[in-house]
Length: 280
Image (cartoon, rainbow, N blue to C red; front, side):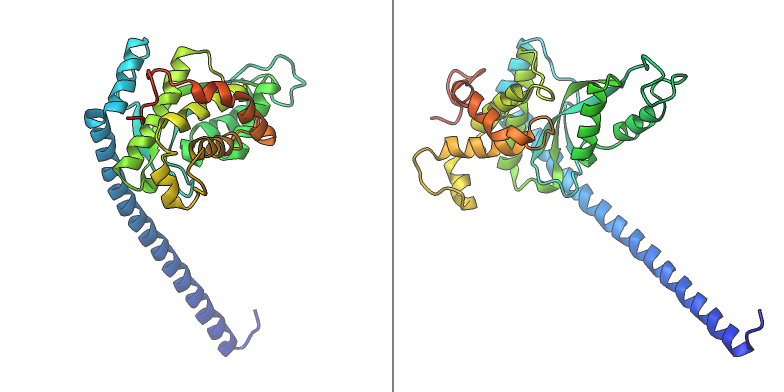
């Protein structure tokens, strides 16, 4: 209040500087967002092209789509789509976890009995609004915990997404499509519950890794992971399947055990192919 004029002037100058800095930061954020949107638009265009070429020209993708139709599980339009997966290092994914909020059975559940789910329902709504790739391991754990506590029922909706910015080339995109379509076939032919049954998840991951071509020796050699030629495929399949199981809170602590338990039977299972599709 009683500071001399020169002090007030310096304070005013500092405020102006801070205001300018904030404006510059906002401009930088807007510019970065615009650059990212432009970048992702290019990735999406390329990814959409990969999906189109897979559906129209890749015989393995076409075979699996046709098999789903013959099994009574015709994929809807837009079943395979491209997505901005951020920092998530994956070629794609299968399924969206739907969290159905159940009405409270008693007022001692820790949420408002006069509402369907109360505060928990709000949390579930926030999770549902997230893109699949933005959902964290903590989100999945919260969904699993809610189901165990009787607050929700979970189910896996069969959808396929490709991570548009992580696709290296057309071959990688088509292998990712085949991988996820194997999951779709398994989901169609069995009462698969990979969220809660870790053997189910291990089996479908083993099959998808094995039949997609993602463990091709050329790819493994190029990545520097292949130490010896004999048996490299099985080792690659196991390694990648274990990583997938570790992303499921229900399975992560014993991922290797589940993969080992399912491996012999599921590695040999080439359905719906008569033999391994990559064997000429």
